[in-house]
Amino acid sequence: MSGNNLKVGLLLYINGSLGGAERRLVRVYDEMCKKDNSIICDVLVRCCDYNRTLEIFDESNCLPFYLNIKCFRSAKECLKYQFVNKYDVIHFFDPNRFNLFSQIVCKIKRRANLYSVCAVRDAYGQSDLKRTFTIRLQARLADAIDLLYPSGIQYISSLTNKDKITITPNTFTDLNLFYPSEKQKIMLFAAARLEKFKNPILLVDAVNIAQTAMRDSGYRVIILGKGDLQADLEKKISDYGIGDIIHLLGYKKSSEYIPEAEVFFSLQISENYPSQSLAEATACGCYLIITDVGDSRRCGDESFCSFIDSSPETLAMAIKNYIESRDCNEKNPYIDAARTFAIKNYDINVSRKYFSNILEGLK
Image 1 (cartoon, one colour):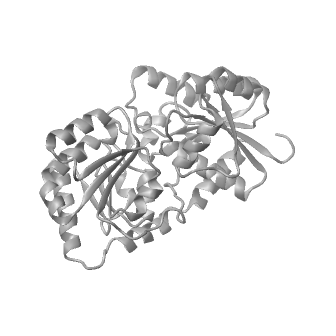
Image 2: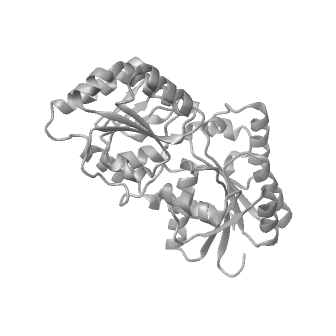
Image 3: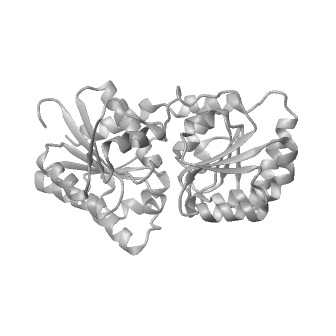
């Protein structure tokens, strides 16, 4: 480490959009560098050019001001840059060969590496054999492990020394960017990637059941994101004849939609905690409808949430119950409850101090 500065390389692979893990880490490093000029962070982006990287950061509401963004056309160029440049810590969050090679570079150059376990399947031991083998290797090579899911401690500690594992303190969001605006009759589902474990099909099936109540009350559903399930969603919406009340808009800045939405859905199959999108929706005073799995009840309480099982009938009932509750209340009773929860629980300074302490311990 040169002088009193600590230099970190944050590894990112960008392919069309940023997921919650990327948004969370970019935001917290930007905040760390803003508050502590002894920390220098380079975001090392492979396989995406500089201008497109900036666009994606902006689309994801996490355009950094205090980080150095360096882009590489290939994985080989990025590895070479890591080898030549003097980083004190390399931080990564995905089990793959590139990150494994980066750890080996760290060992050769006697640098520390920090592994954030951010995928539910990785934390709970649900990955396939090939991915599990990589996770095991990377966990053993890591000098410190940041575990996003409290319930994953049993599995991850079976792979490596438990003493080097710490658990992320909840999540956070930008409470100034995500703030309630004038509410519209919008129910929102937002995911960077429309994949099976995000469960968007469940929402379409439920809207089909609740379509009469939604039409009569003037509510509509907006789905943000793209991915493997997009064609299936479009076909179901067409087959059900509900294209007038449910709309697929693709990738959009969530900050342009969440503040005016009344309801936000998080319907993941095995875990919703600690979703960045849920934190954003809570800060915007949304009523939350959440599948009751894993540690999802950490994301809110029943003053502004409905926790449901993963059936279309139950979700449709939750939608209709919300509509009826709004019919009975002149004022939206959920906005203040959600906003108060966000202010109490989603302060970025808690996470800033957490990561600063990890980095300090890796000096």
